[in-house]
Image (cartoon, rainbow, N blue to C red; front, side, top):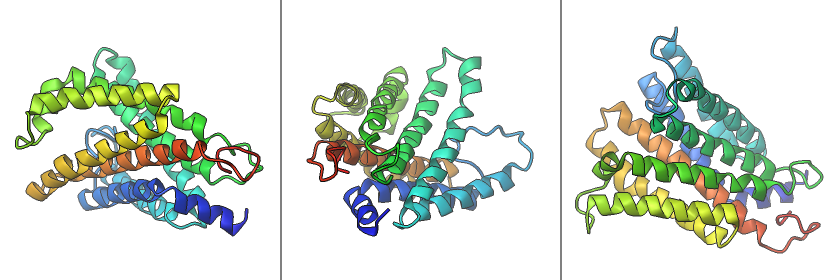
Length: 266
């Protein structure tokens, strides 16, 4: 694998850096609070040595997040994050089987799964041209559309709760934006899954999630820095924004002319 090949991949996909920053934020949150990201990283409270495990996971996230920012270790970092996020996603499966009619557990699974998808996309993105992973980023990226459907359903099933997160000063009102963002998620999902205007839709989806971070979670952290929930929420939102950005970059790149055998710009 030549250096120019790796450099072009890392530089052209800026979402990789945001995705890595999200992992670092999760790691910092875990170490500061000696706990997992509440409401997202489903680890039972009665688990032995929970605090120690949370710190180990935090260090792991810091190392993997830092690795993905450096061109020589970016692919290894992507694999590390894919494995960890897969574990956290699978931890929701028993909850789904136990309470299949409660959508919150499904929603948390798909939030974690969105991070898994992005990790696989980065891993494939950085693969050598002769690798079996080469040329598969677009196919994997499409799976993010399923997660976008889940994001929309979460908003709709818990509409009043979603509306309560919207800053009251944003016109025309909290409920309007709760419904509107659900519709935007659904439209993005249709575009990504169908391939029609997928590049534009994935970019707008990324901008919307980044807007959640700027307008909802960052102010919450400033207002309540003593709450673990605020730290964890910011970290998760940043990570999902990075995941969406990775997917958007991948989908956009897949439509460009290729210098190497016409496969996804490889």
